[in-house]
Image (tube, rainbow, N blue to C red):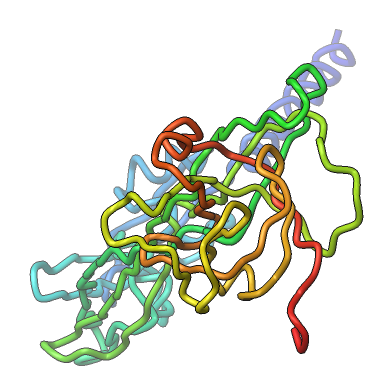
Length: 306
């Protein structure tokens, strides 16, 4: 009987010691918390959440406190022009730590300095934004052409006219303490400029050429106001004379225009620009019958020296 009692006492002692040891080993926080040199007492907590609940300290202001560790915290002030934020954190915390706890986002251009050993001052700037729109020239000299064998030979359909675009230029100024400390600019294309876009059937012309393109072909006659039988180069007007933009087709070039035939580029006109050619007809009736059409144009020969 005495042996049994002795064994029972030993088991009870072992169980009690194990329970105490288990409790200690599972205690994550048992801390003496000291605020600005004044010890506020010991805190016992099994979890970090329980420790925060008992102390009121934010998670990111207290280091994990091991058993029997004396945790010191200090009260700092993070001051801006609009507000003052009080922060509790271990002494000698860095500037980034204090700003993070205070929830203050800063820009590298802001002024941040210590007013004293407990007050961090932040002078924040602001961004001034000014935008303007700049028109972009159309891609007037560019053509995109899709071929469609279902269209009749020589048939050309304009799908899109060359159009201008739009660019936004935004100027930013970072202003701090009523002074501009940095200026930068950003550009953004709001609308892209576009080229001419055509759909074309098979070609009618199969002869040699130096360059080909699609042009708007209109017609004129000597019966039109301001037109006579003499061209800009001094040649006499006749069937086969055409007016061109010299930037595209040098004067005295020889052309072939599908639907019109062989042509001489010996005339100009104030309204003839880019991919626009005016073909001559002897009578107004023939010119009106032609109207305006998109046609393939082939440069057969350039003038001497071009």
